[in-house]
Length: 354
Image (tube, rainbow, N blue to C red; front, side, top):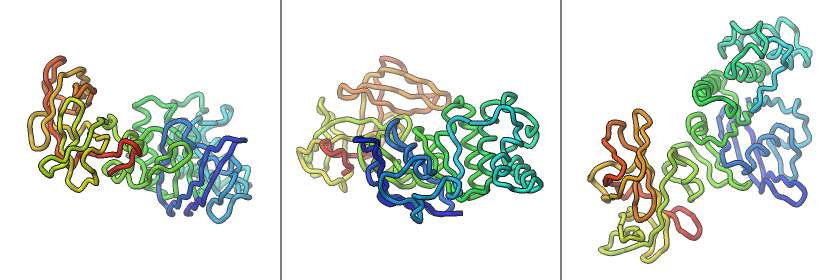
């Protein structure tokens, strides 16, 4: 087991700066997810930790810059399964141990234990071509598990799977981590994967850390507009307004005159240009406590237990999540309300949360 320490890590390709002085401390046994849009540098950062990319500047852990990938005792699970097609499942899982000169009885024992953990015991004699996508990914994970690494690295391991298999494999990875408690760093662009798997999420944008914290911290208190828009599904509704301080109660005044009350502890000034964020799940249908909102229903999307209702508010489309039995109709007026403590407020110029 091991902790991972990144100190002012930078990466440059020619004149292009990809990673800008990132520092992170990952605790022994912690599961950390690196998330962000394509091109934000998350896979590059992971590959530098693995030793597959040279570090332009900075240090990793106890100055391991000069170590080879083998010396770092790190196991990586890639987006592609990278299995040897001519080998059986057991041979694929034990191949690295064989190269390392581990005795055959020990290889067999470690492969059998990993197969038991990942429910592969019945598949050990099969070739990769005889396996489903989910089974191949479990074999790739098993190949990493048998090495007893100090750190697991996952580079978008579920992106090649269909939706049902992704859910199943998320559970497999979560269960695996709970069993072995190995330090794990997981790269994904899917914030649902990050929210369900990670102890801590690090949000990256253009090679910089925007915010890090537990999934609930990022969900409840996003540091800026970028994090607010990235964390949550469906995405947070963003509306532009101006602070109205009438009657001593701050409110966001929208373009059509609609006023949405803001919690009094928000650091806003009268006349300030702001962006407010409303999470779809916080818009309660009907007129209840809080600010009443209403608009024409533009779209109704049933998903089963829930329905997504898109309605017009001050000339912008706003999404609300309601119960699947709610009688939403296209063209009808949709009414909802939201309490002031659930209204997120951001400075329109800087994007920073207020």
